[in-house]
Image (cartoon, rainbow, N blue to C red; front, side):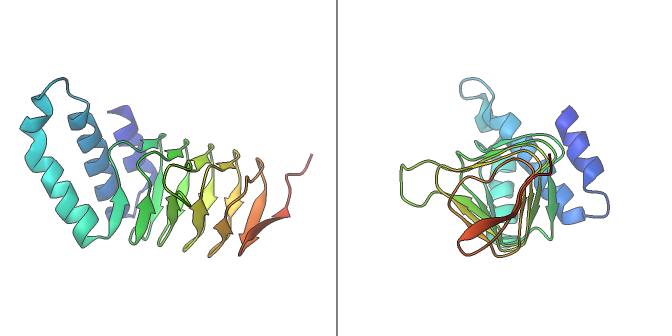
Amino acid sequence: MKSLFQDWDVNVGNPKGRAVLVFWRLCRAIRALPGGLWLLGSPILLLYVVGVEWIMGIELGYSTRIGTRLRLYHASGLVVHPEAVIGDDCTLRQGVTIGYRQAGEGVPVLGNNVEIGCGAILLGPIRVGDGAKIGAGAVVIKDVPAGAVAAGNPAKVIRAQQA
C-alpha cells in the first residue's frame, strides 16, 4: 500500500495518472490473493479493464513489474507488455509502447529514474539504464546506458552520462 500512496503523491495535479495507478495497484493486489480468493475482487478487475484499457486506451497488465513513484503524464495510448519491468521514479508520457519485437523474444527492462518521451517505442530484450532519458518519438531497439539521452528512429545515444 505504501507504493500506492507514493504514486499518488508524485502524480499531484494529474488525476488521470492517479486513477490509473490506484486501480492498477489495487488490481495487482487482488490478483496476488491465494487460491480463488481473487475472484471476490473480479468486479474491480472488470472495472479496470473497461475503464482503463477500453475507455482510456491504456494497456498496463497486472503482471507488469512497476517500481514506486511512477509518473504517468497525459495517460492515454499507453501500451506496456505484461512482462516488462519499470524501475522506481520513472516517467511515461502519452503514446508510449514498451513491448517485444517478435513473440517470445524478450521485453524491455527500465532502470530507476528513467524518463520516456511521448510516442516513444521501446522494443525487444533491451535495458534502459538508471537516469536515462528517451526522446519523444524515439524507436529504441538497443540498450541505452545509464544517464544517457537517446533519440531518433532508430534511437541513438545523443548525449552520454558525464563522468
